[in-house]
Length: 518
Image (tube, rainbow, N blue to C red):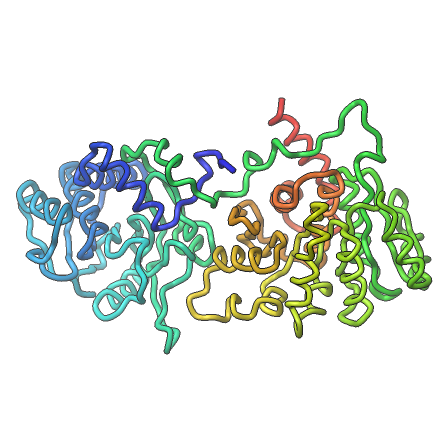
């Protein structure tokens, strides 16, 4: 899959590859460093009024960028000071060249880095200590300076990423034994060519502040050689697969989605999911429920049909009906043998499936049983697809070794590993929802407002995925589209959102999407 170039996210290694390919094409590294530092200086000049600046430089290329920033701000008439971690005589390569230019052109000394170099009159602090490739926690003087900088009233501008942040994970680099770590809390981050996953995954997204991507002379053609697998989740990634209605179509060729319901006291989640499945375009949708829940559903559902489940034989009859092509199991279904049985029977009948909530938790003691059912040869032979939609807690129950509780956690890497292990598309929820496919493709959402953190929101999301799968949209694209539409609907509604409001906004969201196709 080729992602739109502007939406691509590059890992630290891929970014280094982009630099290397550019230099192999004849652009000197020192020229790239000059362009990077100049772009940051210009951004500072655009954003802020003139004032005293302190540039904090590290011993590598990030520090080299800092020397360029300092030189250009000084040339623009700004009062600039510069402090270096380590000795200037130990700098190597392009960073050494830029340190020499600073001394020659600015005619100013290089201070030794310490917390004392930060003064109350500094209006802007430029953090060029460490870049995205940092693989260890900040320690000693660097940690002390970052802590001091975070306490200052000055504006904090980070070069590439805030020092202390891991570029691939968005996590603060921490000591594996103590769990301690520190990171600059930036107001602005300026990065180059393309963003990294750490810019959009939390807590990195918050720690970066406003992010600006600048052009430093790297051709987008290098992406053809890099072949990145990660991008921002935007309609450009999946709109070509979106199942728009056609004039010759009818409801029966737009799929019949099934949502399994819990008992009488637990029916709301299924209704939320079922309504969302219809709103996103499924031709038909039915709630399958215990007999005692029929009156509750019938009293509140109109377009969604209600099918009573009075016996195991009735369940098997429904499963054999190939018109019922997608099954959503889990929302408020109960963590019990009944839910366990239903999941395995749905999978054994090779139905497309969306497994959420209780349908995941019920396998916490034996996740391999679920993965085996997902990967059985019969399902693969007919192309049956599945999407798992866990939040962090449910994810930890199925994939404890990949969970956020583990040292060195990387949400993107964990979602990918979980997709490969399970054989299903993983929709790992959160403010930075990651959708990952078994083949390594991944999309990260950045359009989810905090109002989505409300009861029942996940049930609606499961229903949106179900509705898109019912219409024949591939599982990876269906999950990604559902996540984006979910966020767009919440943004459109605004404050005061409750889960019932989300599906009601979907028609307007679809209208906006249709305008992008025209």
